[in-house]
Image (cartoon, rainbow, N blue to C red; front, side, top):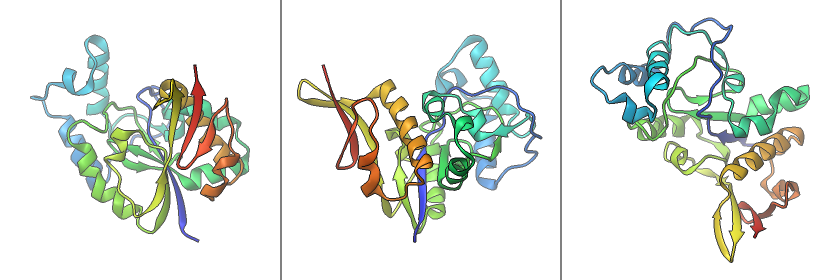
Length: 226
């Protein structure tokens, strides 16, 4: 059986601090990104999309990636998807499945396992050319695997795989299909949790996932609204 990999995005929101030791050093691929993050001539307000105190904190975090304390990625990321997964409440068996099959696509670290220790940082995948940078690296790591792609469009530009399915979450409103947005992120998180709870590695079984009126159709979950 082919290796089964579920690709999910990181969250912009991240928990601060950590009790884990600092990285000290990183892979040559991450080191290249860290070097870019230390460029004093870069317009960081524009790149990171924040200003004021938030910008100061983000720049500091990025400059201390190798020396900052760490925590498991599944604890570091705090967005809607991760809240909906609710990893701490999964059974031991479901956590094992989650840790074995889920990979997070990070602008700084590439493919990240849920249990990998990472520091706080701020960088979107579509900035500093990181999407194009990671694509061949991630492609090599995913070679031979069947991919369940739960990534937003920006992150999909950073991956390339031979065999898999890209899953979307959409609404149909007034006969037109539109992205499910924030609600779609919540449903995505619940779907990831469902995959772990049911140890699901068969796309034909995705139709059995039902959450808040979402129904499986071809390669997406759809709900008719308003």
